[in-house]
Length: 101
Image 1 (spheres, helix red, strand yellow):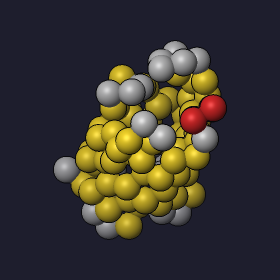
Image 2 (cartoon, rainbow, N blue to C red):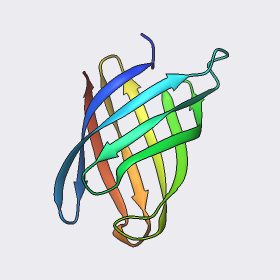
Image 3 (cartoon, one colour):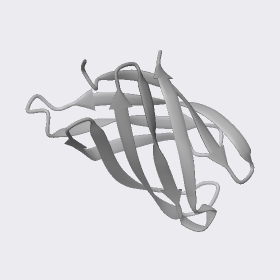
Image 4 (cartoon, rainbow, N blue to C red):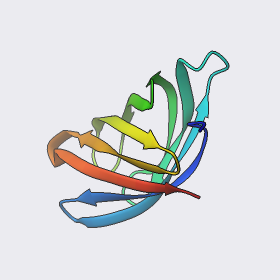
């Protein structure tokens, strides 16, 4: 199954669960992806230079809210579901789960 699509996600943060979405647009060669990550805490963040490694999505980007920090993601897509981790500066590593919308 393709990694492309929109996923409804839940991020387990120290401030409680945050709902949002992840949009994945793979490159034609299947080695990278672009897209967006959206939730109430971060707003909508553009992912410009994500990497695809098999069924794993890897990306890193800078955000300005709720504070300036670098966010990195490691996400495994398994059919219509995803599981992974988001590392967000002082907030630490948080679990991310989701299903294809």
